[in-house]
Amino acid sequence: MTCIPAYKAPKSNIPKNKDFNYCLAKSWVRNEHTIGILKARWASLYQLRLHLDKKKDMKEIVRWVNCCVTLHNMLAQLGDSWEDLSNRQADDTDSDSSSDSSDLTSDLEADCGRRDRQGHRQLRPTPQQLFRKKIKSQCLKFHYAAGTFAA
Image (cartoon, rainbow, N blue to C red; front, side, top):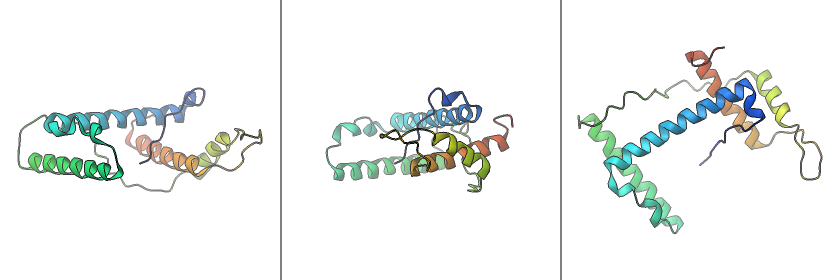
């Protein structure tokens, strides 16, 4: 599982980073809302974290959560009544991996201005930096096209 952290000050003051942080916060709220809906429907999900001791336990927990999600979706399609989830925005966008390479390059160069443990300037981005920039670029491209942010 990969978690992309939000930008912290002073980088969080850059407009594109501020927009990206907004997208991250919005998706975090959606995830928490989804978890809340599932826990409200399936009481067995409340104490799962207490039973995590071994890798085998994690596989069992993932299987159990998948079962709850599957049942939730089946009941939703069969007309079981509960809170309407139509407020969620569809995430079914065409993930076009092409991005503005000049923006990506300049962002990476700015991030690579930091120094390593020996005090040498890092010129090459790490794989984590590349991944974060790619996700940021795709996220911002989608939200600018959707009109969430002013271009």
